[in-house]
Image (cartoon, rainbow, N blue to C red; front, side, top):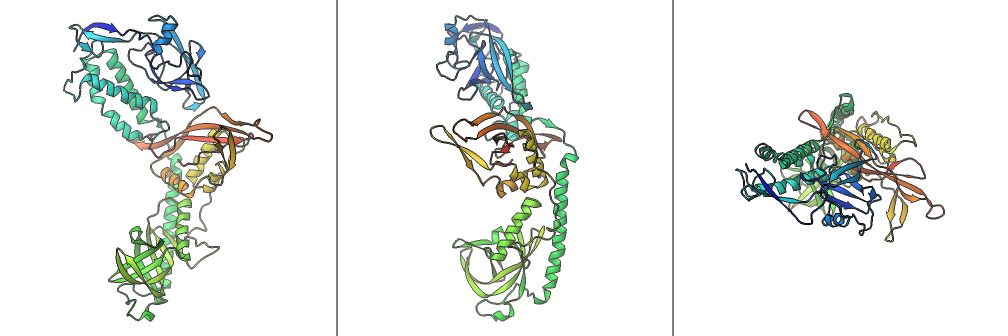
Amino acid sequence: MSSSGRSIIEEGSLATGIITYPLLDQPTPAFRVSWIPWDSGFRGSGLMVRDEIVAVNGVPIEKQASASWTSIGQYGENQFWTKQGAREREVVTLTIRRKQCPGAGWATLDFKGELRLKQRYLSADERWIVCPGGPEPNVEDGFPGAWGGWVEELTRHLTNVLENSWHPRPFSSRFELERHLEYEARVNYFAEHYPTPLSAALKEDWLTGRALLSGRKYEISADDLKYRRAEEEQVAEVAAAARIKWDEFVNAKAGETVEPFPGVDPIRGDLSQIVGKFVKLPPITNRDWISEAGHNWFVSGQDKTYYFVDAEAPAADRMLLTVRRYKRIVAPHVRDEYSLVCQVLGEPRLMAVHGQGIFGMQAEPVAALVGDAMFIDLTVEENGVSPFAGEAAFRQPSAALPPDSASPRQVLEAFVAALKEGDQSLCKQLFADWWVSELSDGRRVLNSSEVVLTDNTWEDSRRRILGEVYGIEVVWVDDSRVLFSGNEFEGAPRIEEVTAEIDHIGYFDGEYATFSKPSFNRFWTLQRVNNGPWRISSTQGI
């Protein structure tokens, strides 16, 4: 362990010591705090990483790059203080704005700290050390890599965690937590064997990062998860009805059904034995689909006998549409496995199967058991639709559209409630049917939109809320901003926009906590026109 020696002051280094990122183009120009080193005069002042500095000693930050303090926390900050005639240990005030999360809007706070000169440190025997009482930069103490490089590496890591976690970027919180925990043993060793302000600050920031990456904790009751039980019950009810109806259909056709394998040779055999008859084909999976000249077919074959089912014929098309409907209104998961009862058609066909030319019989599906979860009688058709068994008595969603006076938070909460209940129609009504584009000269244009919430986005969101996401909470709503004031031209609309932030809640180690994945959408925008109802303008799922 090194002992304190003396320090060497770097000339022309008077500064706050903090590190920032410029946000001069936003409506409220600011510098976001990226890092607060252990020897900064603002360490321990209450200032936090991600605070946005909006004024220095009461004077607001300006957009113009020539503003005299646009270098706060940047390279060359010392030049400003030199021009001001500032001295070491002089106290300055930083005014910041901080997200009130959970909550809404921003809090404005003042923090005071000293200006300090940057210093480098020597031990008593005149050797460089990383801090007073700290190790020499090239010492390893049995760890891979020297202390000097490790401190720099950990600082970069902590800066990234504290400044960028949970913000609009590809981010896997659980992966980053595992990576963060890899530093724990050396952080503790450093604090124990070199008890200095530096090691204490690094451990404090490491603990803050661990709590941040572990996520905000939530209490979720059985009642909060009743939507999952309802979905399980719906799946079980439809599956039970499917098995009953499948057996009934198969038994009803038994007298006209022939064994599919081994079958009649499609070229030399007596086709009158099978044409017009029914075959019950074994389960067909995605691996049994082929494409010929851009046309899709189901293929079922054994013992040199093959059946080709046109996947784009009306009956098959109705079947696939019914599967999509099941995913939207019952559950987003259904195994892609098709047990088909088909009627054999009169024309043999030559198809390329796995690179080999194969003759087989064409067949038309008349019934399907999909994933052992749903049954479709394809002989039943109404307005181009073949319902799945049990669909007519299926539970109708009961959620209601929120009142026009509902806040952005309430609109998002209604969206989550409708998503849990499986009410796709209501969810679509909560999305804006307009969108705002910006021209090259900066002018904005209001456009109508027909794409608000696609079926794929809906199914993906349902899959998550019924799977790894156990809950969604709106944790922050920004102040609204005006996109159109209504004064741009006669008849111009007034359009306001607001940003909201949500928590995705998962279940880890016996606790419910916030987590994130690169595919999650944590930030949402909502808009309203002429003080009308707020609607979601982010064309995205959860």
